[in-house]
Amino acid sequence: MAEHDKDDSVVESVTEKISEKTHGHDSSSVSDSDHEKSKSIPDSLKSKIYRLFGREKPVHKVLGGGKPADVFLWRNKKISAGVLGGATAIWVLFELLEYNLVTLVCHCLILALALLFLWSNASTFINKSPPRIPEVCIPEEPVLQIAAALRIEINQGFSVLRDIASGRDLKKFLTVIAGLWVLSIVGSWCNFVTLFYIAFVLLHTVPVLYEKYEDQVDAFAEKAMIEIKKQYAVFDAKVLSKIPRGPLKDKKRD
Image (cartoon, rainbow, N blue to C red; front, side, top):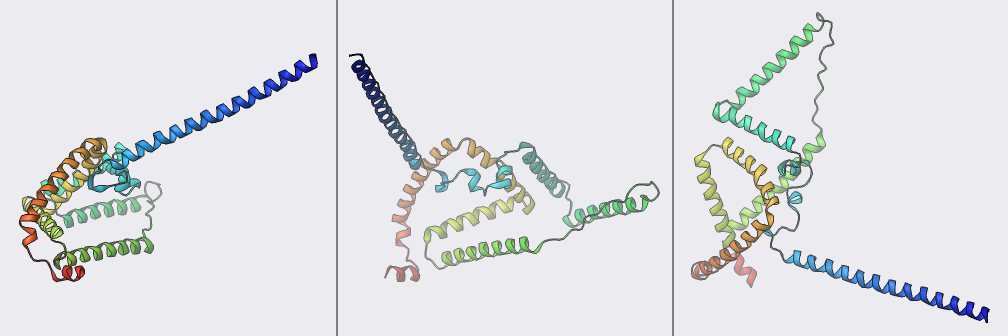
């Protein structure tokens, strides 16, 4: 009888362990499925969120990533502040003090060459080692890469201008004309140095502010874009649809 009771207890313990494992597996699978559902819901919601200019990447990736994006987004405040301070000093020299670029470069070279020349000759009298002037050599490969990248961008720009001038897209034509007109007005207010400095300051302020308040900005931009599309649809129905299209677009439709 005792042996029979022992066998019964062993069987019961084994069945209890099996049931615990199966229940644990079921509960883990249920929790995994719930976790996957909870993951899929935010992903679907994220895909429906409107982003400015239809971007799908973070602001850091849009700016190219790497050190330039870190500078624009103030990842290292000392470096970003130093770059912005240097640009401000250059703008003050050229704009407020009315320094000429050629004059500034010549004065800097005169000062540097004079200091190095005096140091090299005075090192024998003061028993110090002469300055080690590094040999500067521009490598060929980076220059070719930059030239190739510029060539691609310039060719794309020429292709866009050709499409606009050929009358294929009236909307793009009006957008470019309006942008050039606004740029000409801004250019009449200030010279090239000031315009470049304003663009540089905007690059150091607008992206970091947008990254901080991107949800609010995207929501406002979505409402503004809906309103612009409504107004453009009215303008297209009343004005643009009555303007004859270019011959290239008619051939495409045929």
